Picture 1 (spheres, one colour):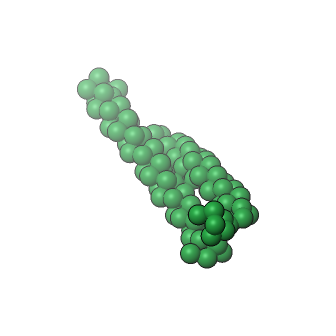
Picture 2 (picture 1 turned 30 degrees about the vertical axis):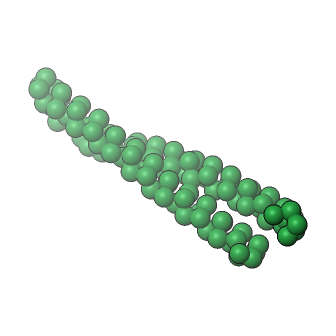
Length: 98
């Protein structure tokens, strides 16, 4: 494979991995917050504390999910782009060294 094409493919794969990780992390944070809300709502209903609003639980979870997912994806993206930049600058081995 040509070095320029290999670099483009590597960068595309790092970007795809960052997007996938962002989605997985965001989804996980939302699912965990939903489970915590359901648990707290059941506890509030059984103890007679009254109605527990979902917005009070989920709005902070969305914000937290955005930050955590973005930080995770950014770390992967920065690592991948720096690694591919270094790899593209390395000299290609000659036929005698292979």
